[in-house]
Each structure stands twice: as structure tokens, then as C-alpha cells.
Length: 150
Image 1 (cartoon, rainbow, N blue to C red):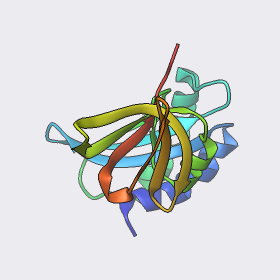
Image 2 (image 1 turned 180 degrees about the vertical axis):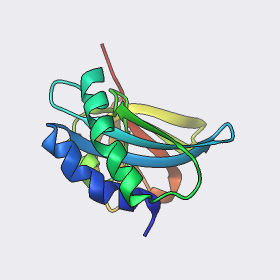
Image 3 (image 1 turned 180 degrees about the horizontal axis):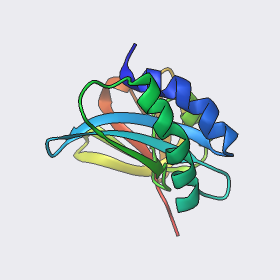
């Protein structure tokens, strides 16, 4: 089982017990260091106190379960306004939302599509881009993230 899946499994109930939801677990190498990050969400937004409470609750569990051999930094962060949509449930939750679709390769000379999420079906993303409805196949899409508009 992947490290992120292990951490998700024991972290999610703890995060939920603190009034938040677990958005994502990331284990990445940046600048020669490893980082384990939990991204949390909450109706009304996540505060620094929420991040701190989750960190304090999860830290001893990480020490006990010890899912990672090498040294790493543990961080708890807000999922953020412009979070990346990854799971089918993410797409379902944000149908009708403003998103930015980034492609691996340009389509008609365009690589980024600020648009409105209209549908998601097994990796296929359908958006309203201006007055057009566009559908991108899973293998074309580098990422889809929420787009904050003010």
C-alpha cells in the first residue's frame, strides 16, 4: 500500500473528529527534502488553528505507525481556494464551478482554459469555455483546479 494511502486511512477519522475533512495527502520531494502534507477543508474555511489541531493529533500517530523510513517534514495545510480536483467526488462536488483546465499539449494553440465545469465522466472533463462546450479526454488533461473569481 502506498504511503499516501496508509496515511489517508489513519488520518481521515482524526481529521473528521476535529470538524474538518481530508482533501488530499501528498508525499513529495522538494529541494532535496521529503514532505508529507495533509490538505484539509472545512465549511467556512480552514484556520491556522484547524491546521495546528490536526497536526498535533496526527503527529503522534505518525510516530507510532512509522509509515515512512527516511526523514521528512510533516505539514498540515488548507486545501485552498484554487485547489486541484483529483477524485471523481471532487468533480461532482464542484460541478458549475469556475475552473482552470491545463493541458499537456496545446489544443488549437491554447494550453489553459479558464472555464466552468459542466461534467465529469471517467476522466473526461466537459467545460463551458466562453460560448463553447469543450470535452477533454483524460490523457489530454494535466490538471483541473478551482479558479477563484472576485
